[in-house]
Length: 290
Length: 294
Image: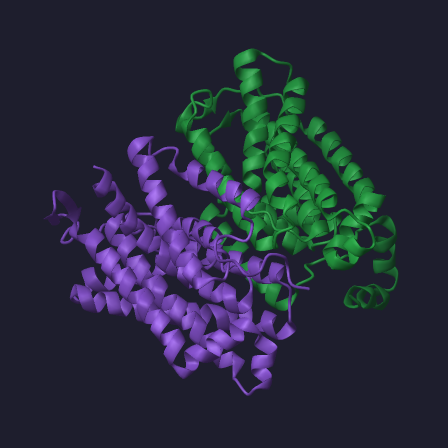
């Protein structure tokens, strides 16, 4: 029971970590909370569902299409809603409002056009179980753990080794100096949003398969924000650790206490953490930049 | 017909009360609250439960609603504002807070869960709401023009400089948070006693959004701007009978469009007063020039 809960928690934590990394990636470079991220995840899930169910594309390919689609959406979101603010050097409050607006716009557009129906993925993966050492696990959970690990490691490798990755890290450290050294910041930011969108596509597919596809499913990114705060806003390793911690703790709370108090628990955790460890585990920015 | 019109006015004025509270907080301290619906809900449920189960007097229940939501404002503000965190932390904390309150309301016994509280005494009338709205506007105006309000404006513009001048950042932010939580609580209490049925589903993030949209569209740093925006945002869709989902689509679009094209909001930092109206009619260019110079 204990190990079972732990592994289920890790699977959920892996998805939280994916979302939190995507969110932190944008935060680390533009220094604002991208509240539109949840809607991108939701749209990624819709794209994947549509392609899989209505166009008869195989599952692996539809995951890929969902990743590409979400990445393009995230990129478009930046160009339409944030780039003007960026040129004007607006404060992060304006970015946050714009992100909030995007999120509400997209979510309700889906409500108004596609409808509030819940769509379920075919139960190919959720029904199958793998068992080892007396622990029985859904195949989907295993996939979630493996896939999250691979995606996060891939991102890490990209950021460490590729030229664009180095530019992203430099820009997140100091955008202006980076620009002075001849980095095309516009392009770098475009890349950041593409990468974040790709992660949104993966997590959207997993969330859709694990739960269902519906307009407000993006609200689960609240957990990603909390995970990012636990790890420290803007820190990628922090986002991974925060996501895993939150996922495991939540699963234990729902298993041993009650699933009702789970959300209240996550929020209390956030507030307690802000009291004792305001920077999070790996945080770098404590106060607002002037 | 008359009843319908007075209903719309009552509704919009209730939202005006909550919007003015949020305008004092977001507009004058530069912090962004995403969970204001929770304060609204706490006010509504406190007042509703008191009159429904305990037969408390309407006015006492309203006061209790204001008190409890202000108190919750203190509880939530203390840890989050104490540490002088980035505004993002605060926004995320309020986001979580809003969701947590909704989950609690859905699962507590006294709130009767998702079924809600039907048949709360219908005590809110148009005259009461008008008087309370004027009172709240007056208090907010005085608050903004007082020493505390000017300190809040200084904090919004440049909190490092403000702190160097000896302004207590925590105290200023806390004071306006408590004020705005109290306003939301009052609006909630009035709402509960007007529609006489409340359920957790009424106080979702959509409500927080509507309040934020009014403040942003009306102009951050103005009291009258958000008031006008709140009236427009409630009355126009209601009168045109637009489906609520398209209304929310429009809110989202408006928020982005305003940030991109007119970040100071419709009214900017200006207040609508008798003088500005007169000036507007007499010499158009002067008024326009005053608006452009931020």
